[in-house]
Amino acid sequence: MAITRQELLVGGAAIVAGASVTTPFFRPRYRIKRCPARSRVAILHVEDYSRPIDELLFSGLRLFCINVQGKTVLLKPNLVDYIPGTALNTHHQLVVAAAEAFRHLGARNVVVGEGPGHQRDTQLVLSDSGYEGELKLHKIPFVDLNRDELIQADFIVSMPKVKTHHWSGVTLSMKNMFGVVPGNKYGWPKNILHWSGIQHSILDVCATVPIHFVIADAVMAMEGNGPLNGSPRPLCTVVLADDPVAADATCARVMGFEPDRIAHIHEASHFLGNSSPALIDQAAEALRVPEVPFQVVPEFRHICAI
Amino acid sequence: MTLSSQTVLEPTAYSMMALGSDLWDEHTRPRRSLVRCQTPNGRWPAFIGDDEEGSWATALALIALRNYSENVPAQLKGFRWLLRSAGKESSLLWRWKFQTADRHARFDPNKFGWPWQPRTNSWVVPTAFAILALNQLSCTCDLEDSEQRIRRGIEMLLDRVCPGGGWNAGNGVVYGGALAPHPDDTAIALLALKNHSDEPVVPKSLEWLEGTATTLSAPWSLAWAVLALAAYSRNVRPLVGFLADLVGHIDIQDTATLAVVALALDFERSLILLAS
Image 1 (cartoon, helix red, strand yellow):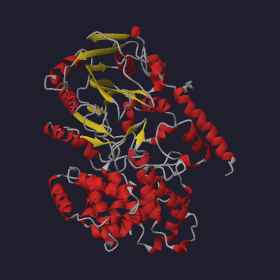
Image 2 (cartoon, helix red, strand yellow):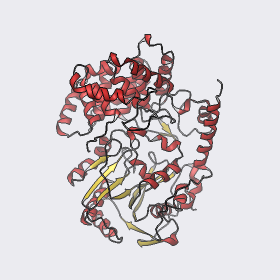
Image 3 (tube, chains in turn brown, green):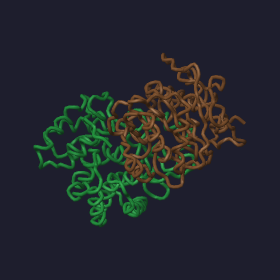
Image 4 (cartoon, rainbow over the protein chains, first blue to last red):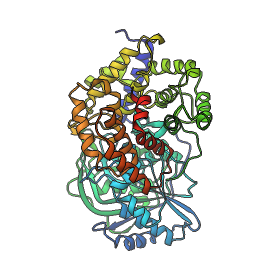
C-alpha cells in the first residue's frame, strides 16, 4: 500500500504530537493570566464518608472568603463509569455535603452537573454509584452535561476524585473539567481531547471554563492503572482550594509526586494559578508527603518525588 | 435531568425511528429538519449549529431516513461520506505506530471501523451504527466499498470484545487490565453482529447481556438490552414488562432515552427498522 503525501504529513505531525504527551512539552500560548497573588489551600482529615463529613466540610469552607450569596453553584464531580469495588468516582456523600454547605452559605441554586467520559448511560452511573437516591433525597438537581443544556452557573466547583491517570499522570481538578465537554458531539470517551494532546486539552478546557473552587476527594483515592482500573488507596483527606493549580499541586504532593514534573500542572502555573508552596497559604492539616508515592504506570515514574 | 431546547441529531433520529413512518404528521417536521441540516458533502453534524465536520450521528440519520424514498439522494450522499469516514488507525502510519510503538491498548489496528468524529480512533458504538446503516444499502446503490467496509467493521467489533464477552466503549484491555463490558455498548454491538451469530464471541456476549439485563435499573441500558436480545430471538417479554414498570416510576426527561424505550417496548417493529 502506497503512502500518500497527506498521510505522511498527517502521520508525521501526529507522531510529533503524540511524543509531546510523554516527552518534551511544547508550551502553547495563552493570552489570559489568571494567577492570583496568593492561593489558599486547606487539607482536611476525613476518616470516611459517613455523616460528620457535612460539618467538616462546612467548617473547611469557612476558612475561605467564599461569596456565593444569591448565586448558582455548579458542583462538577468526577463520574466516569461504575465498577464495583473501585474508588472511581467522587463519593456522593461528599457531593451532597458540598451542596448543603453552599446552600448554608447563601447560594440561590446548587446544581450537580457531569458528562461521564466513559459510560453513555448517565442514569446507570447515577443509580449504581448511589447518587440518584441521595440527590433526590436532598432535592439537588442533576444536569447531564453530555446531553442536556446547562443553565448559567456563576460559581463552578470542580470536585475531582484524586487518581492517577495512565495518559496524563494524574486526574485532579483540572483534568476533571473534561466532563463539561459534551459527549453527544465528542463521543464516549471524548477521544479528540486525547488526540489533540491530553495535556494541552486540559489547559484549553480550563482556560475556557474557569474553576472558582476545588473540593478534591482523596478520602479513598486511586493509584496504579487509573483512571478506571487502578487500586483504591486510602488517604483520609479532602483538599479545598480557591485555585485549581494550587489544589492540583497540593494533591500531587499528597500523592508523593513532584507537581512541576506533571506537564499540565507545570504549564498551568504560568497562567492559571500557583503551584509553588511559597505562593500557597496552607490551612487546617499540614501537608504530609507519603513515604511511598502512589503507584503509576511506567511512563509516569518520573513524576514521583522520591 | 433537564430537557434541552437544542435540536440534537441523536434524539431526533431515535424519535423518528420510534414514531415510525405511519405517523406522518408527527414527524414531518423533524424529518425536514434532519434533511436540512445535512451538509453538502453528505455528513450530518451532532447538533444543528455545530461545525460541518460531520459526526457519528450520520449513521443514525441514515437509519432514521430508511423508509423515506423521497430522501434517497440525501441518503446516498450520506452513505458515500460514511464510506469515506474511518478510524484514524486505518492510515498506514498510525497502524504502524499502534503495532510497534504504542501497545498499551490491546487491539489490532488493521481492523478498523468508525470514529465518533473525524480524526479520532474507531469506537464500538459508532462502528456498530455505521454497520447497521450500511446493511440497509441495496445492491443497486453502486457503492462498491460498502461490503468491504462492513466486513472490516465486523472484524473490528470482534477484535475489541472484552475478555469475558460484551463490549466496553472501545478496547477490551488497556495497560494489561481487562475492562468491564457496558450493557448498552454490548447491545448495540450485538445488533450490528446479528448476521454473525456463529462467531464465538456472540453467544458469550449474549449470555453476559442476558444475565446483566435483569439487574439493570436504568431505562436506557435496559431498552437497548431488550432490542439486542429480541434480535437474537430471546424471550424478552419479562424484560419488557420490567422496563414498562420501570418507566412508570421514573420521570424520563431525556428525549433520546424516551425514544429508545419506545423502540424497545415495540421491539418487533423496531427491529425491522434497526437490524433487518
